[in-house]
Length: 437
Ligand code: PMP
Image (cartoon, rainbow, N blue to C red; front, side, top):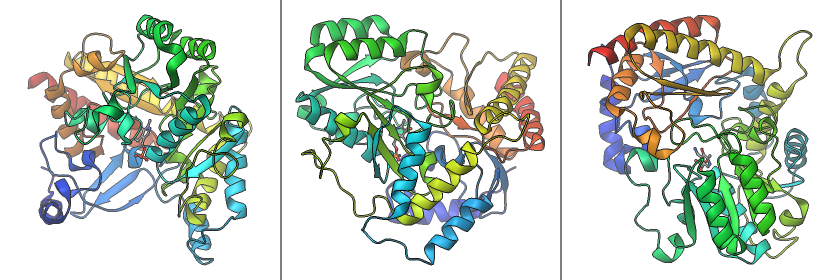
């Protein structure tokens, strides 16, 4: 049995002073039957809690830790940077360096603005799209999560779905009415909507690979239809690659699916575990942003030197030229991820449990569902109780997964063959538990 005594005590104290004891809802483990482990440290593929438990971590701080925790290059770079001061609120060479690096990796981005969170990136991208087009309405897809800006907390995924709060109180009717929602992958509904209202729609925002209703992949023709229809109506197409950027492929989901969005939102990996996100895209649109243009957006800590340093160090690792004969970093992660899923598939089959296993590069997920999962409704139809049994059994065996069906799992460069063997062994036990419950 997992001993979480100290974590439980810490959680009780945290709940006295923070809503739900946490600074972000899903961390509370409120939908699974245990208190959250309080983390003391992390290294490579492992995290360690204050009770002394060690876990192989597939959450990776919800995506950023693609090179593993406390990677020596990243730690060294941050340590050196701190000696030069932690924030200046003035331009630095580092900002241009990271901007150039991102632009090199994602050619649809011609100009970029750094911000501090994915929420800020999507919120700002929408403002620019509205400023650029002079239109108010936006389209989002049900079950996609784009952060917690008011206009995006409408039929939202991730924690908002986990806690049954897809439409948050506090978002005014006036704001919500400008957000039109369509089921993910529903090409027909989208085309009909654009035929009716396309000329009034400022932006269509989408997770090109959706990671916030579990991992849901775009159907063939879905993303290309978004591109075609938005182009036709002068609507700005925003790819929210905060999660899937650099994971589905080094150059993003946009490269994997061959679509050039007008704007892209990034986050997580570009900060290497420090608070960084960004939005960028076509020069003509980005030149609307202040001080070049009239659309206001600013940040005291935006482009922070430590955060830029961590981002540069992380992107340098994943984009380094591969050694002779070796696949590139992202592709290697995909191969490891595939091995884990092959193990999960066998474990499920042997136990007689019906699952849908999804993968996109180094992102992966398990649905306890005998039918295809391709949108929020089909994701929600999965067996949540089975998920809870699976999750708890894996945690008890030292495998740290996201504590909700509506999240995605992440592979890092630090996960070893031994980690993968242990993970698959644990899955065999966990799938049997699911079969028995
Ligand atoms: N967009 C996507 C696709 C995300 O997955 C997230 C967070 N998981 C966000 C935006 C919001 O990012 P943040 O939590 O940094 O505000």
